[in-house]
Length: 179
Length: 182
Image (cartoon, rainbow over all chains, first blue to last red; front, top):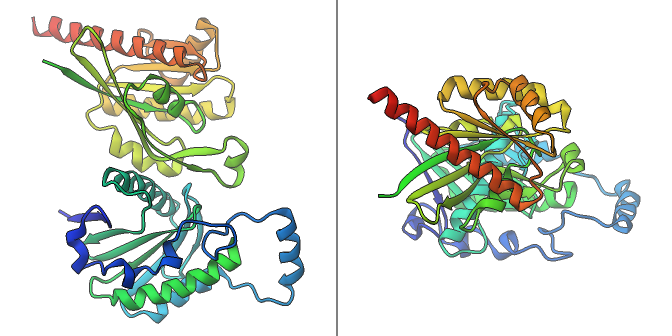
């Protein structure tokens, strides 16, 4: 039988050996609550901003979210794939290594939705990450701003520190591009 | 001794499942609402992605209902499969006016009843006419004896009428079990 452990950081502090502490794992700007103008909170643009974005689009190359996920998959040894979903369960992008399966983004949305409630059961206000530790590897799931979810599938021996820094860079471009 | 019953609250997207649980639960509802995107955001602003959980206890009786609400969209069907185990009653919520959801809802309700072998209570939302509600419930696959409640789930009192039917249905199924044993 497959053994699956889902760990919400902050609920299970004894997992800190597997999940590096936050000051290493998830720098503030990654998980900070959305504030207007911050690079991670920007998911809504006003009409005025949209116009200025459109004007600037010609001069600034817009990174394709699929290529960002492919880069994460290729740059970090042991990473098998990545999926970006909306919080209501639609697929927004996936690395070339992932199958196009409608239930995958839906499962990510459901898991994050439930994990937020588990965080509040643990006394927390903000979910930082969800770890699914299973016999075939790890799945790390992060809320990206208030409306998106990113999942990375990796081997159990993946260098989580390296993974996080690569993901963080990728996310910064994603937020700039697809917000 | 308290008797606890599990009620599966399910039905199509935007039928009124979360509203029903919110209106009847006596404890704070555990909810997994998020903002909708794309075409669904034109129907409503928020949607359930994992589950709703609420409870209802009869004041003068040791009967407790645990209400497990599912998401409505087909892409979340795996959540219904997780939540449906050991349900005692299926409370199936359908929006009478969202005609485009009825065909798929019928397929879903028939499959659930075949699988779970428990009675259903069909809550026909945005409907005031019992006869019309009955016809709709029968067309979805509800059996002749199953409870049908026309309701306006935007109104909390309407949710309580659904709970009354759930309780009556539980009572009837306990009595028929007793009769079989005797």
